[in-house]
Image 1 (cartoon, rainbow, N blue to C red):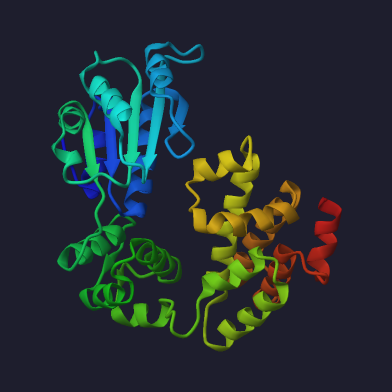
Image 2: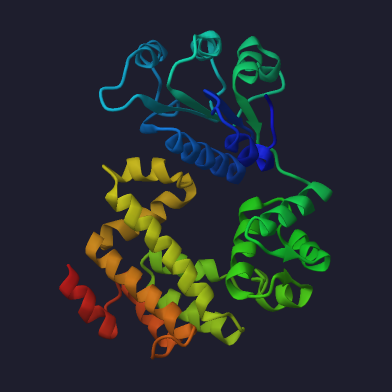
Amino acid sequence: MIIKPERLAAALARPPLAPLFLIFGEEPLQRIESADAIRLAARAAGAEERLRFDAVTGINWDALHAETQSLSLFCARRVIEIELGKKKPDAPAESFLKALASAPEGEDIFIISAEALSRDDEKKDWFAGLAARGVVVPCRLPEGAAFHHWLDARARAHGRELAAPAADLLAARTEGNLLAAAQEIDLLLLLVDAPVITLEHALAAVTDSARYDVYKVVDSALAGDAARAVRMLRGVREEGAEPVVISWSAGRELRLLSRVQSASSVEAGFATERVWQTRQALLRRALQRLSPRQVQTLLRDSVRIDWMVKGMDTGEPWEELESLLIALAGGPWLGALGDTLRTAR
């Protein structure tokens, strides 16, 4: 069965869960979210163990075949993930995939992800076998009316509605970049309480990259440049940014750092969290500066800043944001927050 990413949730809700999933295409956000949805469904179906094989670091296809024939010592069902990345399937990979598609059905659930499949690959026996026995999810960038439909569906999934003019504005600013569009919608959901997001809401709340970029504020702190982070923070404040947007962005990155620190290694954490290669060096610099206890302290402070913005705690959120960013950057002056962090080392 071949289905679009937006129909995957409905397919996963219908038991029994398919034994094979192939996710492929050039659109990264759809690939990541599709894989996440399948993992959740697999866990709900009793698959508690997860094995991952990555073609980037090399896969011994004979060893992988032997692994698929073995039984887990810990649980009855496993999720076995095979990441092909940009590597086109070679002859051993094609042989394995063809055998997998025709093998007797067992308890394991397979998730195969790829970026570089061609039209010729889609005509091959192994592809047809996977589509016949499992679920194939092509992830291609929606364009034109399809992109508008994607924006509408994204908002509806959170119980909101995008007015047509607001959707037009979002499309004009983010078409061609689903990740940017998803981030803009997330911000609108955070800042707008109304059930219908209007053009006026979008104009007031959506980040305009031509004026300022709130994400670069936090990135400067992650890079260890406290002075630049504070300078940019003051700039976006003057241009009308909401403090909750920066605290939300900082909290998101801090939660990611915390999850990576909890992994067996930084590399394993990046792989599990699907951190893009282009951001790994930035996050490594922050991980080298901050201990797990410090990250947890900063997370608590980001939550407290959210409370200040909402009137649930006392304090000046912009001043606290400066302290948060300086601490995240490891700057020499950390204020009261720094006293807390020094005791958390």
